[in-house]
Length: 288
Image (tube, rainbow, N blue to C red; front, side, top):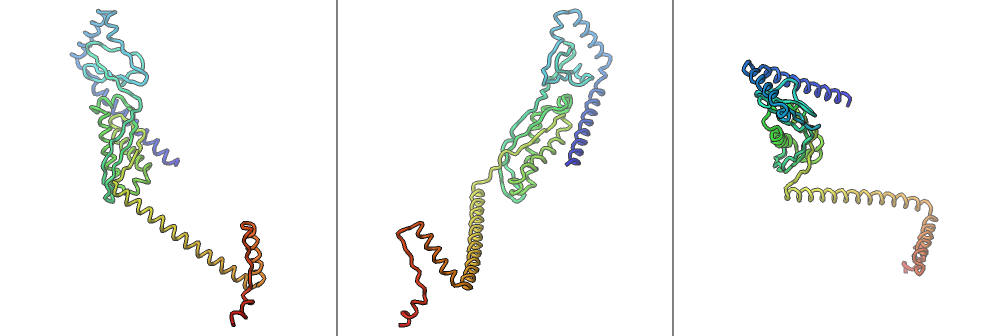
């Protein structure tokens, strides 16, 4: 367990390092806006100063605690990455920004018709929890991170379940969910998205297959019941055999058994009287 946790921690650190490297590459490659760009920026600053204090309302922006702002200056990402939460400043003429929600997002995977490894068609749906871990990559590397993650989750669900048998799908849901999470997390690493959890909600079987499985389960239960009954009969016969051997060794034990039976019957049904008659007394009558 400790080795697995250490491996997972090292993997997370490696992913974080790769994301930081990609973000730095984006910012460094887009840092030089050229002479014309700097002229436009200076003109925008001068215009802002001339129109104070009216222009201050166009320069001050606010992002909430759960949001980050990616600022583009003349179409290029500014150094420093995402801004926020709180106040930040932009130049009205040359800057634009995009807000990115950093909260965990949940969506349902629509029911997918999957052909399992043992050629059984099942309908499986699930739920995915993910959040934006790097706002810069989520804006710069993918057009629509949410839609892309949804489509990728559907494809991954079909691919993973296609390698499993029906029994494995019904019994190993946690393992399947963990495998899907690892696959999605690796695929969405370039988009700055962290897949936190994947759950399999429901597995729907065809009606005919449900009837067949119910009949199989009923037959298995009946077979087990017959085996248990046969084992009980065998144990009872062995106990009776041992009891008969004990009674044969001591003839008085049979008379004691008669008296015990009379005591039991007298306690339950007082109007019934049973008188044990030894068979030896009837021998003379039978001969005649």
